[in-house]
Length: 229
Image (cartoon, rainbow, N blue to C red):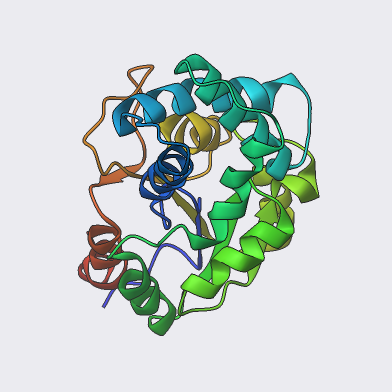
């Protein structure tokens, strides 16, 4: 049996462990239905994906405020302007966003195999604490935007994680090429792209490893490395 290559596995949370698209669509459709409106989920997600990075890049603000402002701009983009007070529906919905079906089983396998687990997330401490109730394993390393006062793809999360991980061997795993894969790669951090939608990289680059699911990642880490793969 060969020695495994990593001691610590960190994850992005929303989009990697948590089905943020499902959560966001449910939140928007709930508010729209209450007001007799109909929204197209695909249009909501396209607008959200474009507008959230813009809001994050403008100035540091707590993620609750990022979500609120992004929700307001998405509704405006879709021809349904709402007041800022109404837009708090989105951060209020976040604690209910569900994990992907493969999340907890994969995390349990990694924990049982002796890996130390962590989360690097563009979120506030209290919101992440609410989300962690969905997980069945503990996380030793938790780095949030609130702690580093910046949002990925800025490097603050990765520098903070490196300080906490120390000399232990580290793999980062994430769904977002823009927020996680590209900055991790630029810092020389081995990164696994959880490419659930078989997307193409925006710059033609590659992750160290690429998987479609967390199950595949767990298979590789818990079984493949033992075979020297």
